[in-house]
Every structure is written in structure tokens, then in C-alpha cells.
Length: 349
Image (cartoon, rainbow, N blue to C red; front, top):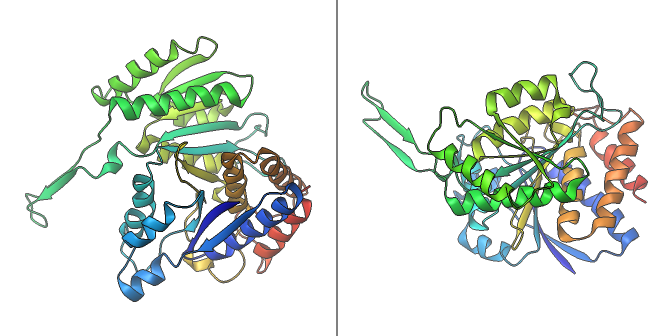
């Protein structure tokens, strides 16, 4: 019996999460997966009502679950960073979810903005370090609001954090398919201290995986090749900031944020799964947002829990629904959110 904490949160989050849970029920029934879900009132409405973002008592409870299923965070009445830091980053750090896993996969039937590219060209995996780098919050400011203001934000890398994410990426690359190609994306020509650590660690760990071909690309070059030759990439490992940026570009080349899912993973602890899009408040309550990414997040969650057959069935259902060409991948007419969930759930088999 898996215990799954559900955090629908803000904007379109509750709508797309509802469809993800619908598909989860369909897969669980067909493949004998036993689970229970508990929903938590976390997000903008609670913050605006009580001033609380993520109480310690809730963190303690979430630690007892097998997985967390998150919708989206963000609200126009809440200052930027309050919910992102208070919920997303807080959970990633609290549960040491040091792997951010982002598949970049063009489904058949989904249009990419790249000319002459198809599903056979866009199928890669980005392994992003998730608990270090610029996101740790080291730094500060002085003389704020004056002409002499100084602000610093430090990127912090450790050998432990760098090695474990690189090793995870090598292992995943070996399991993923027969391409056996792993690329480190960095900026070692300019960020010579921190990214020298990445390069040296990548080379040292790579000696243990002689079957895997390795390469190093600067992040600016990687962005260019994503657009020109995405077929060059199989598995990518990179730091927190660069992973954040290139996976949004990856989402665009796979058809948009509406189909892109991500996992925040602690292989030995509690992991969290989510669509990578925002809360899109202007679409909230209209039933127009595509739930495909939220459903794909459920597929990733089941896979991480070890329910490979149920996960594969959801992936097949997503592909079958999108291949028909009438499933919105961004926004559709009112009511299309539920209709898409119904369709994909019916195709799980």
C-alpha cells in the first residue's frame, strides 16, 4: 500500500492534478497497485488566509509518505519567491531530493517548433542537480535601495553533491537505452572553480563506466544544439541553474510546458513529482489547461515506486491519445481538461 501526499496548490494545479489522479486510479485498477492519497491544503490560498506557507508539522507528516504529487505554485497576490522558496525549494532541501529528472520527449502527434525534427530526434533525459548551486541561498545584500547597493548570490558545489548526481546520471544512462551517451553541461571556461570540480569528478567517475561515451558541452553551446541538433543528446547531467534553464528550452522543443513533467528524487527517501508548468492563474477554473504533463508526472511517480508495468501503460496511453491529434498540449476549449483525462484513463491497458 503506497501512501501518496497530494498538494494541488494554486491556479490550474487542482484541475490538472484531478486528472492525474483519475489516470492513476485507472492504472492501479488494471495492474493491482494499492495506494491511498491524502490531500494537503498548501499554497497561495492558505498563505493569504493564515500567513503560513509550509508548517513544520506538515513537513513531519510528508516525511511519512512514499511520494508527493504536486500541482503548481504561484499566485498574482503573493510576491515572487514566497511560495517557490517556501514550498518547492523547502521540500527539495527538506527531503534531500538531489535529483531533478526531466524527460524531453516529443510524442507522436505533438508539433515541435523545430523544422524537420520528429520523435526520433527529440528523446533525451536531463539529470539536474537539485540541492546545490545558486539555489542554496548563500549571499546577501548591503545598502539596499541606495546607489551603493551590493548584492551577492553564491553558487556552492560540494564533492559529495557533485559526485552523487554524476554517478546517478551514469547509472541512469546505462539503464535507459542502448545509446550509452552522457553529456556534462557546464561553463568551465568561465566558472573555473566550481565547474572545474564538475569536470574532474565527471572524468573520475566516468572511468568506472567504460561502456558509456562521454562528452562536455558549454551551456550556451548546448542551447544552440538543442535547437539545431537535439538528436545529438541522450542523457545530460548538469548543475542546478543550467538544468533549470535548458529543461524549459527542452519543454518547448517537445511541444510546450503542457506535456513536460519532472521528478524531484531522493533514491533512498521521499520523492516529489510535478508538471513543470506554472499555475497559469488566468486559466484557473476554466477546464482549459492540458493535464498531459500532470499525467506524465504520475507515470514518473509509478516508475520510481517500482510499478514499471503500470507506468508503461500510462506512457502508452498518453502516446495513443496524443497520436490521434485532438488532445490539447497547452490550452483547449473549456472542459478539455477533464475530457483529456477521461480519454487517457480509458486508454490505459
